[in-house]
Amino acid sequence: METARVDAELLACHVLGVTRGELAAALVTGRDLSFDLERYDQLVGDRAQRIPLQHLTGTAAFRRLELAVGPGVFIPRPETEAVTQVAIDEVNAAASANPEADIIAVDLCTGSGAIALALAQETGASHVHAVEYSELAFAWAEQNLALFAHAEPAAAARVQLHQADATQAATLSELDGRVAVVVSNPPYIPPGQVPKDIEVREHDPEIALYGRGDDGLKVPLGVLNRAQRLLHPGGVLVLEHAEVQARALREAALAAGTWSEITTRPDFAGRPRMLYAKYSPSGPEVGQCQT
Image: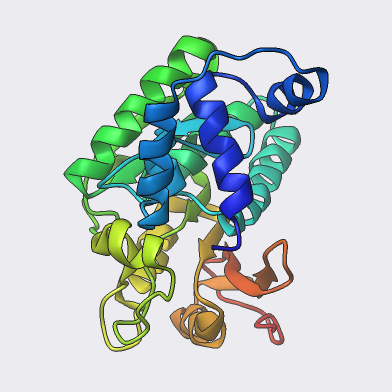
């Protein structure tokens, strides 16, 4: 594995209860660190079997958060941090433009709660609603909200979790027409594109990976449809997708006739990985579907 050395260091830090910086300093200074070698060897052996590092440590880093993760929930990836950044910028812009207004953000298909908690932590949103269908993933989101509440109670108080199908019209129907930003990292992998990484293929839940339909777009299109009912005019949708789905989602948004400023945004690596669109009930202006 390309990450073998880093993973070995991180597992050592996990066993020792120290950071990588503290481990490096101890090695340089020769400071003695008590070490459970048997436990470490077991963890290294498990990692060699391609069990995800995050499952072994029980945590995953996401922006400023440390999330609890394990079997049954999707491990958040760096590309989703880019999606979250766009959503954070939009929420903060809405809050700045309307300081007296209730700014509502919705995270559809929240999984571990990563995006929703980042929104609560890094924005001035009045309320953050997070929706997850899977019972197993929802339990992880509840755990992460509880951990977040312990560290940042005021921010956590603005988050509300909902176990529901994010694509159904009844889900959060009380918020229809009131939401400033909808953000989503839905399942979107086409059925024939099985992930190459063993950690993803064998350990991330299928319900969080495959978007259903021949092209994997059934769930993303459901999110697109749900978002246009949730958002108020001028509200923004930020939707993560696979690189090959960029054009199809732009065209779907344009065909709906209710979106403007329809663009594909890049992730931090420059890959086309998210749909950005503004809800415009009067319809898009000419030229507002861009690559």
